[in-house]
Amino acid sequence: MTPAIPPNPAPPRVLTIAGSDSGGGAGIQADLKTMLALGVHGMSAITSVTAQNSLGVQGVWDLPPEAVRAQIRAVADDIGVDAVKTGMLSSAPIVGVVARELAGLGAPCVVDPVGVSKHGDPLLAADAVDVLRTELLPRATVVTPNLDEVRLLTGIEVTDETDLHRAAAALLALGPAWVLVKGGHLPGDAVDLLTDGSTDILLRAERLPREHTHGTGCTLASAIAAHLARGDDVPTAVRAAKTYVTGALAAGFPLGAGIGPVDHGHLTRAGTV
Image (cartoon, rainbow, N blue to C red):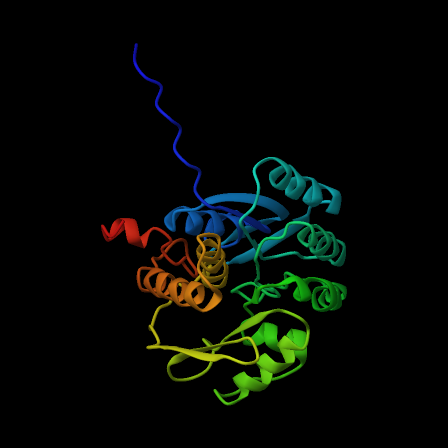
């Protein structure tokens, strides 16, 4: 009699709560590709459906908040969650229900406070900003705003590297444990500031002259969540995620007539995994 083969252990489990990008470069699609590349099991709660391609967002349809809640509960109650990443949450009711559900999960959470798309299309309702500030950010293990999102959340205009610390302090006052202010839109080297208020880490990288950058923010936040689920502390997770995203940016490719995506599968194509 052939002995039974024991089942493989399950990999770490990461839940992304975000919008769908029909073009596949950002949103839920980018999150799940990143999670697969980094060896974790990706799960999803879709908040909105977008009609989107390399040229921009042609339409957005939000799901009912109860549908978002049901997706989160279905995954959490049966499968379990080791880390969470939130992206496009779109409306105040959706932000509120996500914040309330995260309170019961007990898992680290990476909040990417998506405000606008790469093409400048608004993805967060004006009345949702205050709910994000007061209800979601206090539940965040790490919040990962770009400079436009810093301005949206705090009113602070970051114009050079010295402003990063002032912006991070204002964001920490809203309650997250760590803040990663992404300085990619500043001139010169790409400099990000990671801080919890007592430890400041500047992550500096040579700027890559790349046109195809769609999905960069989603990919970074998902990579951080994947590494947190694998047991890394926040500084280790952020450094590893930045290395992964830098490789994905370097390998970004043209797709359609506009801005192409970063390459989430660059590790496989390079033969490193």
